Figure 1 (cartoon, one colour):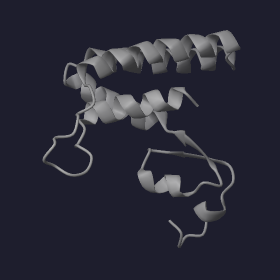
Figure 2 (cartoon, rainbow, N blue to C red; figure 1 turned 180 degrees about the horizontal axis):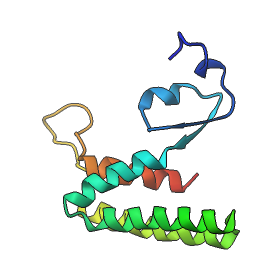
Figure 3 (cartoon, rainbow, N blue to C red; figure 1 turned 180 degrees about the vertical axis):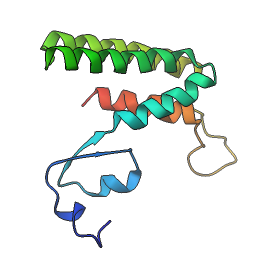
Length: 126
């Protein structure tokens, strides 16, 4: 990533797939790619995760609205944030954080569902 000489000097908005290595570049803003989100949500939807279907529908509804009207009002942004927040919380009730075991060191491994839900919830606060 450094060798190509692009990201170390990039000062715009980097849209990516949430790969941890991208976050070392702090001089730019980060945005997560919804195509990647949709792929992950389709996978979980195929595992009968109801929250994944609802979150996918929310993202697609927002995309359709944006394409139709060109921009969101503050009220519509708030609407989608609240809708997503509720869906993410419902999913996190089904897939809560794994707590550490007293005999093991380090952070406990989290489920793929938890990791997706929690990371998206964090970005709602931005």
